Amino acid sequence: MKGSKKILLSIFLFLLFFIIRAYETSFFYDPLIVYFKNDYLYKSFEEIDLWRLTIHMLFRYSINSIISLGLIWVLFERKGYFKFSFFFFVFAFIPLVLIFNFLIKDGFEGGYLLAYYVRRFIIHPLFLLLLLPAFYYQNLSKN
Image (cartoon, rainbow, N blue to C red; front, side, top):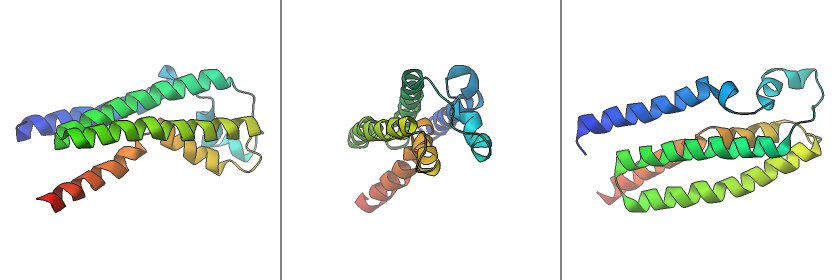
């Protein structure tokens, strides 16, 4: 892929992350957005629809993963990186969602920070921030 096309496609994919973030309240069910902004300081944990939240988190994680995979492909164009990232995203979701669901059922008895950060890894493309530098470094060391 040529340089200018690669740059434009990368910018477009990054913009998709911003669009998802900008419209998160209208696209996804997540009552914890308001809770983690400020309510955890003075409100007790409210009852939420766990199945609905889990499905919406899976949907958001899938969208972010697809965009991340597209970005990895555009930047590196290597099947190995793409396959590794795909399996990484799939197998990272399973323990994250299990831990998060356990913490929700527990009602944040041990504190809210662990649930806050696990939720961040699920709903935001933080794994991309780990994978891009790793692949870039691996690319440099092979050449």
